[in-house]
Image 1: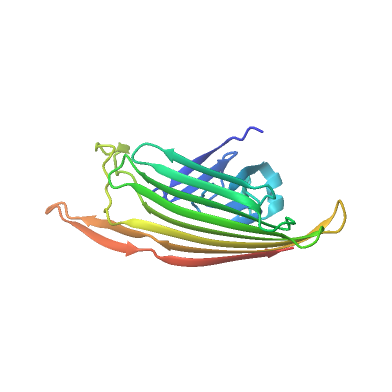
Image 2: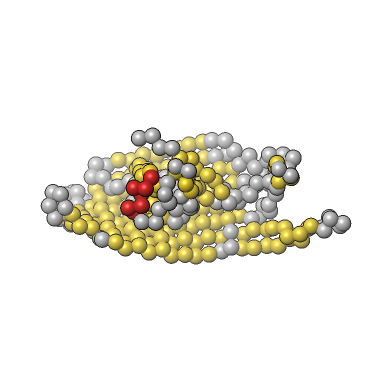
Length: 256
């Protein structure tokens, strides 16, 4: 299916936002059917991306009229599989991706999968950088032929420089070099995510099953900013201030 959307980077590159059919989805997507209010998205453990367009997405709850985006993560497999990928790019970028899955016992009732990512890159903008360490282990326990328990954990630690661009002079950007960074080199933001999902599934017959799920997402952020308040046009002195928007939030979901 052809999907018409494009990401929009806002708030100094802090977030990834999507437009669907002209509507803004906000800094919200879904991950394995759970609301995932975390702006930055790692695809290291993502199997596929589901996009539901239009009003049909309202069946899933708090959704913008344009639709919804649901990231489906990789599941443990009985057949052993291992992969290691290394990527290089401009401005000193390098990224390491690892994926391993298989059975932990002989009868194949206990399966595992672990995904790892390390990303480090610079920018054409002065002082710009982005570093991310990500790990996502998963376990599947086939208790009986009809009953299965899944436990998934995800940890992400990101450090990056927020870049709010350049000031406007009249109706156009200021005439400064495109590499000019107008913030402070010490304004480095951090974002840590801890996500735990537990799922118990029981098949009643070939067509019906019951499922109970629990999700906990913890988000720790530190967002230091140095800003200017007023300019004395006579002396040329700028009144400045420092702000650190550190916060911690917990999100719980449970459904059956």
